[in-house]
Length: 280
Image (cartoon, helix red, strand yellow):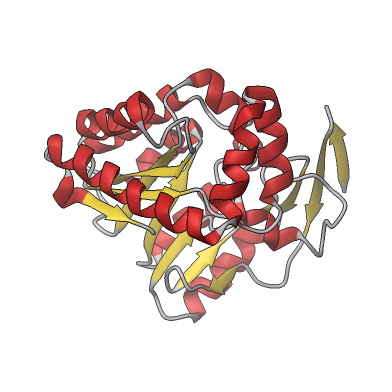
């Protein structure tokens, strides 16, 4: 069944399997393919490059309606391990409010004693705190690229506002859920230096998660067209700087060296060095 809504193409589909092997953990679970958040730098678009070759990332979502039935079968059959929800889409993107697929799958995984790793940009995840609270093998994190709502709206147009994500993680930590922040990708000249970077690390210090991760912007499949188009709106003069940082090896190596130094210094000043994990 296909639905078209305000330029977003929704398709209800069935799949043969839902709990897949993963390099990130033992398994990954993706009740949706495609992501309504439409983040312009998202690496996950590679996962739909064959099934949706002509569709813009963020303009389609495949809703895997039989995910709850499949997870019941697969979770019982497979050896319990760590599951990443969701590795190539956000499990709490807007359609989850209606379909509740991620919640149903989460209930099954926890019942079968799987460890669960959640990373989201959606405040909807707090709906499921009743399932997560009290489970020692649950980690919940949110991604923050910038604290500036107008910038976030350009680069992450369908995601919850940064302040809403911060509130969700604060609430999660307050009820004993193990939490983390993912700072990234840091946007060159926007959130990777000066006040932009300091604001992000101030958020880490304020929330005090169990740990936090930091990543740079990476030249992943398909991102240049959408990143450069967004920069043409935000600040066209940054386009050549981004091109060099992403695709010129010497520039990229030097940029990476300086970025690591800046992050470590700012984290050290806030007493956060022991909680930081660099992803690059």
